[in-house]
Image 1 (cartoon, rainbow, N blue to C red):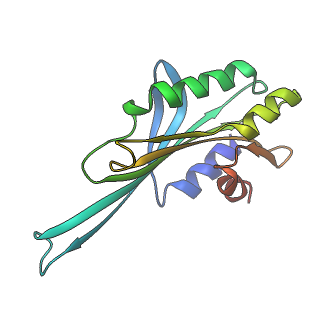
Image 2 (tube, one colour):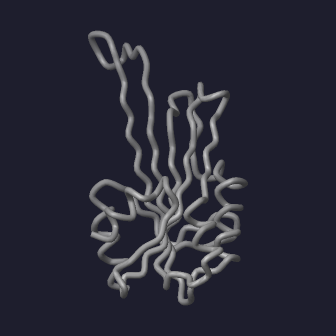
Length: 162
């Protein structure tokens, strides 16, 4: 519980937190949403030339047991089949990222560890003209102060372990 509280404290300054969030029937302790919108305008804000948005979504779940292959398959399914329930593909969408963060004991299975490290999710919308989506997975064991992630989420792993 201590890790979840400190994580919430880190995120609440920049993210909007939604407790007990579920997607495709899978429950998460919370979802953290971050939205950044940039625009260029002439003279006044009503005369906007263009705008673009970057969105980040962090799904957090505390697991009572070790992360398993079944958990990994669920994450892959959620990100590839249900991303549209989370991200908003409006006319200003440029990029989004979805990161699944689990507080758990790190797995011992070397095959599963390699699968997590090699996991990659990238999807472009309308050949990149409507933006793109990247996916990440993070496993953090606060007792051992260690973590595991795919390449995309490596920068977040360092941030959340600090």
